[in-house]
Image (tube, rainbow, N blue to C red; front, side, top):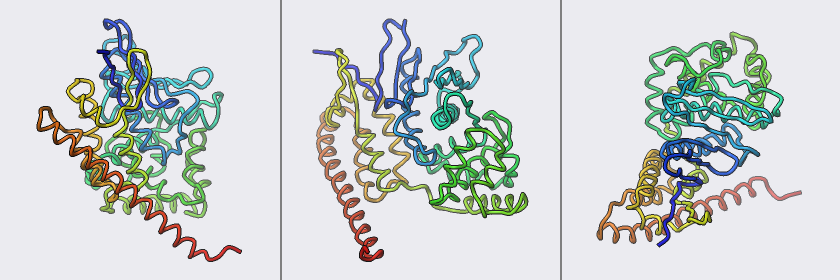
Amino acid sequence: MNHVRWLVLGLLAVLPLRGAAPVLAASLAGRFEVASMDAAVAHRVAAAAEEGWRVLTAPLGLPPAFPSPVFVRVVPAGTPGAPPTHDVAVEAGGLVTLWLGPRAQEGRALRVALVDALLHRLGVAWHGATVQPVVASWLVLGAAGWWETRVDGARLDALREASRRHPPPELVRLLDGTRGVSGTEGEAAGAIWLFTFLLAESGRGGEWPRLLARLLAGGDPQAMVAQAYPGRFGGPDERELWWQTGWHYHLRQRVLPGLEAEEARELLATLARFVFADEAGADRLPPLAEVLARRSEPLVAAELARRGVDLGRSIAGMHPFYRNAALTLAEAFALGAGPEADRRREALLAQWERDWADGRALEAATTEALDRWEARRRGPAR
């Protein structure tokens, strides 16, 4: 029987021989490439990178892929000169490398490091390799916080509760903050709310994308805000009032972040999609039934558990069209071993197919109805 190396979603791993070579893990092509001496760390970082890309695609205007990925190099503990958290370097030709230190290989520190590198890569993509990207502290913290609170609604509630203990930080202090991704609890919260506020204030005029592009090129951020959001304020005092009003408005909203139907569909399709490679190196997309049948294999079991956690964090904000499918998939990921679990697996697979088809049908019918309504509202074409 041929031995099969199972790979996580969208990952391509080259496992080390006798521990002598680093593991190379990549998210989807043109996004992130991770090298680590520890296979578990490499896979965890690559999976987090892919999640971050999915969540931040809309707010950062990410393309489907870059011509070259962000190269992530996990630095083993005890390496001389290793960064305690992370460093980002833009090298000749615009290549972006993230050096990931021992204290930034999971959790919030990992998200911050990945966002920092992603913003540098975005700056290179927009302004070319000859312009060194300028990535402000508040922008990194804000985007990382957006990611964290969009995949875990409970963290958004916790952020609101923590923010109530602090007044809103001055907009000038946030915008002109020194480079780096440190800051007090209040400043970190302020960065997240500022990121949220500027996104919400952006309309069809493209205010936020215009501001983001200008920020990454460097310059006076206060002047850039005034230029990107014309007519919102008449001077520094009105600008501060504009910001503080937005802070309190978003702080008092009690709605948890929810996924649009398209976002929910894409998330579930991603979580139900696996890639594996045989010894010849050929990639194949096995059906979900085959993956679940091999759930006793350690690497498969670990990946199913990770996806189950990711899905569990998203169920509260799942679009109603796809809630049943999400619940069924989560139960399938959590299956144990034994004959009873095998029988339950077959029932869940059939239920997943039905729930998935129902969600797709509801989304399509709703889209069609809205299109007809919009066409009637506009009237006959002239």
